[in-house]
Each structure stands twice: as structure tokens, then as C-alpha cells.
Image 1: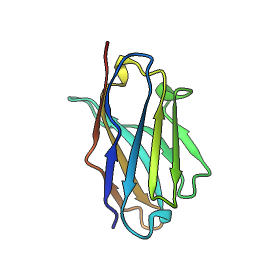
Image 2 (image 1 turned 180 degrees about the horizontal axis):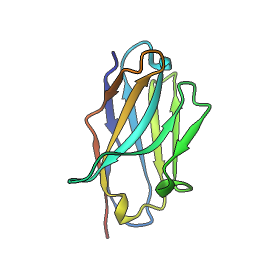
Image 3 (image 1 turned 45 degrees about the vertical axis):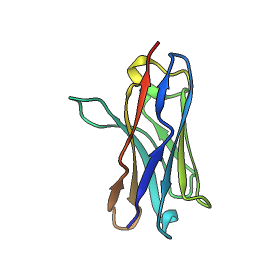
Image 4 (image 1 turned 30 degrees about the horizontal axis):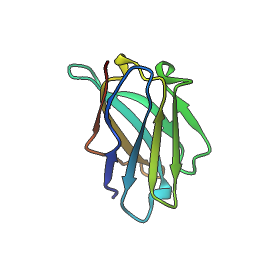
Length: 118
């Protein structure tokens, strides 16, 4: 199992930047692909970005391409989401998810609120 804890959310003006972090516990962090999702009340949780277990491949939702960057540091058991040029529609609770590459089990963090507003 792995426990996840997100941090870095907050209030930012449109056009601003934030960097989210998701720290994982457990000694097998390198066997997990990591994903960032977001959710707005009343809507389904949606995938924002994902990164493979060794960080070699990343994918992004169209609505964040060119603005967000996912990365990971396996030595620190941490995945990051750098968010630039934030827009009001990026306002959501952001969650990280760990998905085991062998048995497909997955785990979620508690989420961190991002609010983009002037």
C-alpha cells in the first residue's frame, strides 16, 4: 500500500502559477504510475496529467497542455504538478492517484484546493 498527501494548493490570480506536490509513503513508490485528477462540485473527477513509474512518459488533458507540467522525483517519493497561466476554470480540488503497474491497485490522496480568482 501507499499513502499520499497533497500540498501546495491555494488562491491565485488568473495568469498566476502554483506547484502542487504529492508525497507518498512506502518503499515501492517506483512501481506506481502517478496521476493528477481534479474535481469540481457536481462534476465527475477528471484526469489532468499522468506520468509513468520511471517518469519517462507523460500525458496531459487537452485543457492543460502547454500550461501544466507533471514530474516526479523517485528519490523523494514525490510527484509534482507545475501549473502556469492558471485560469478561473482551473479552480477545483486536485487529487493525486498512485496506480500500481503490476496489479492495477490504486490509491488516492485527500486532495488540495486550487482557487483561481481575481
